[in-house]
Image 1 (cartoon, rainbow over the protein chains, first blue to last red):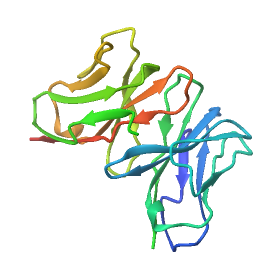
Image 2: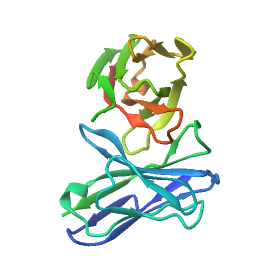
Image 3: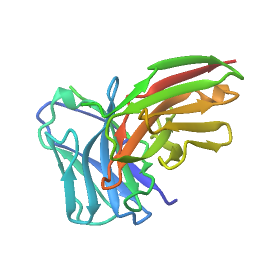
Image 4: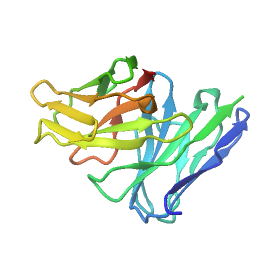
Length: 112
Length: 112
């Protein structure tokens, strides 16, 4: 089915570990986004990408790394996880500037 | 800082009643104002959106009212149903921007 898929859906890891969250979309949307959702904060933008090999920082980029070698994939890596990065992470995509964003179902990440 | 302020944080409405959620923004460069609906365990889904050249947009039981001079917009859910129980997020985006600035969300409970 066409859409946006995030994996894993749930992940538990320890502080200091590296963890990568995957995002794959089948629409060939040019824009992709990573948000984190925390109680009391709503959704906050971590990084976004306007096209393959083009990425830019959002509101809360510290501690995260992204890459976009292919249009359909936009992985998010926590290089050395910290407890403050425990959150629900959402990936989104859109067809262009001014177009609606479509969200995946999220990855719930717990860092112990 | 929070660019979009949303209230109330939570809302309880009886079945058949009207649910009203309010948002305010400061950045006059914003020109796209969507509302997202989120059910537990799912990603946000676009519900309805408005641009500032109109004061109201209606889709079924959902209406956005927009007051450009006051820099406020609101979501009205008419004839609220238990199936409308979800978290609602308002958001805003500038004409030259890609990413959405979200409010902190409103948890709506519609009682039978």
